[in-house]
Image (tube, rainbow, N blue to C red):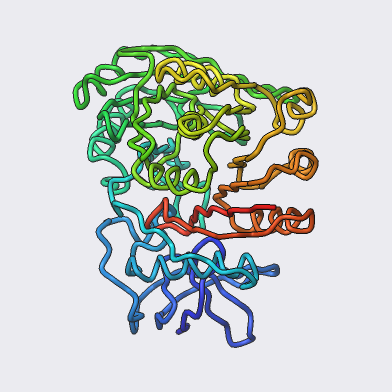
Length: 439
């Protein structure tokens, strides 16, 4: 049938309306498009359709750079002008906060392609045994298509995919199949220090294997390179365990953040979290820290490897970072030593429980929070309302959960001073937003 696209879903798919008034979701559609689609009727929403032909393009539609645009689940907005992407993201922040608070103009990304310092590519096979190494198909997870070229990361990522695909074809190994808990190869993780150009590759598997030819395949296209094997051991009823084996090159890579307060050198291990867009992370951190009063006692909750903690330490009296991941805390402590910072302390554990356990710590003047997409857990939120720091700087990748948490903080006596969205991930629906609160 023919359909006009009127708006987006939260995941960035176009929405049109069927003759009966029901919504249908169309990946890679842009509001204003007039399309020919097909769809299968489903008993329960959402109805999902497939783009067959663009009968009349939206004024906001552009020619995409990527050959996989119509199938890939990674870049749902690459066919929309970048200025329109920014307008949509800024609008989403306003809607998340119910248009009750002023929102500063969104900060664009310094680069719209080649910006990702980390990507993961999945191994998959169909019933015929055809091998796929690439990204998920839009609106059809967990199905994978073979990536021939990806423009989101450095160019060597594409070379690595081809090299590993050739190695796989000759290896006799099977892709891991979760429903049957069978097969070996799970996914390939590629990382790069964007300021240092240091490279890392991690082969994620379900069991140990001989990796000599895998290492040779990667060294042929990118050397020096750090290479790891990461084994996932799963057993029903018990948590998944991970074992890492260092195969080649240095046991970490380094990255640098060029900040207004001074450069910071950061160690990144295979399991370390680091902001995936280095250049925009620098702007994010500078923007967040610009509100901090000098000589403050600062808590950095959900601190990861401590990059923002260390950046805050340059103007703070004392900074305390709390993070659940033991590996991240080890890296944070080493990053602290590498940068000769003496006024930062790190604690490992659940944020809410750790604040309960460390009730004798000095009360903070300011608290920085950067929680997962689900937002602040109830205990952490309770502690914020008990500690009542003068400032809260809330960084979030999910404005919806952020808005709900901010509303609770406002009810506890805080004033929302400013909202600042940033575009960390061009061509996707993801948004980063900073909320500045004071009391």
